[in-house]
Image 1 (cartoon, rainbow, N blue to C red):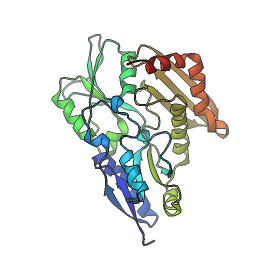
Image 2: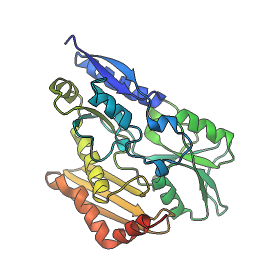
Image 3: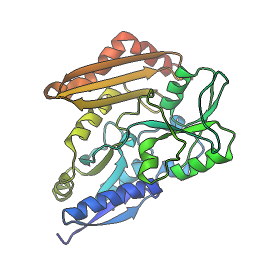
Image 4: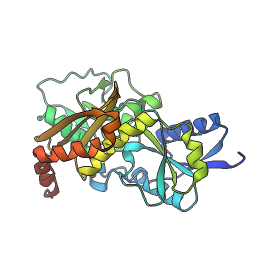
Length: 305
């Protein structure tokens, strides 16, 4: 196994952590790998809200191009950032065991956040988080927050915000979760949040075999169901869609929702089937949601300026 596998990664601390984790897993199976750093559009435009420039694909496009051009052998992504339909010629090679799927609120240092009747000022660039927060706290205000996790944590301290919303997994992986962080157990996550995916060329048997050694089937199934739910709803950068699938006692349960951008409208669904029958549950849940009020919300979003 003298071949060195070139792992494409963004330059952020979290992305590098993810890539190094994959390099370690490859080493456990006897493979040698090096990191290749590639800058994405999402790393260069740090002002425009993600829901205006397109969440899915903005952090993966540059790596996809490098992969298709033969500059790298595999790429490592936060799975929630990957388009539900991958670029032609690129396939999933492995999904790592899922970390926390939860969102957390990080209050400004020196404050203990306990929501009262007084309006709060919360920061996030996620349309999903924005809509769910406003659904629960309609009198609050939301401001845009961009940048890597280190930058966003610094901005919280320098701002007048009451707090900002982060993915728990991102902060925990690089040991940056503040002690005063509050888990938002009521907030449904983005599809595939907390999961890491490795992709490679569709015909690359060497790397498909190398990555199969650390593939986690349960995480892959659940994240895939959530992504099917998102794809069936035609969800994009400006659509507040959430989903979470879990396996227990031989059954898969998916919980999903769609909200209007302002959080005033919300439709949700919970569906449970045996694991053996779960292959289409994500799409089926989305279709049922559309038939029970979700389509009206989707139509409203599409016709907004």
